[in-house]
Length: 161
Image 1 (cartoon, rainbow, N blue to C red):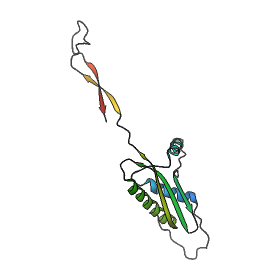
Image 2 (image 1 turned 45 degrees about the vertical axis):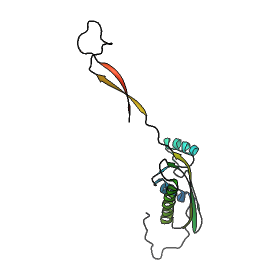
Image 3 (image 1 turned 180 degrees about the horizontal axis):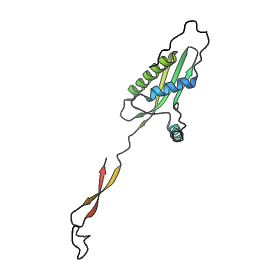
Image 4 (image 1 turned 90 degrees about the vertical axis):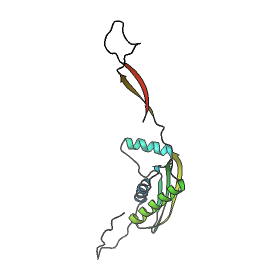
């Protein structure tokens, strides 16, 4: 996942601090990459997230909390699952993906990844569209008295996509 960087011999010593926001973004990207995850966070926050996305100020960390210590970290993931996925298996897959991403990219010991499935997203019912079909059969009810030639009629036929 992460690319190892070369360590230069004789490089100066120093302290590295990984901020919580960096770890949160890594965990959020990993959680979203798991098939069956519809969204992260609770419903009201997702609605606000849609508004933020519309104006170009998205918040990829919604529904994710990570506490980073000096040698360890812990993550909490709240998500909405797609209908049809086994929820315990989905939670295990999310846990594994987040664990691997945090371990590989941050390098600290991940002590726990808690996953909370808040809701299940149901697919939208198929919308019925109205399709106009032009026929060339003579329409007795629409024929004007004394007219000649084929007349057509318009029928409305519902179709489901």
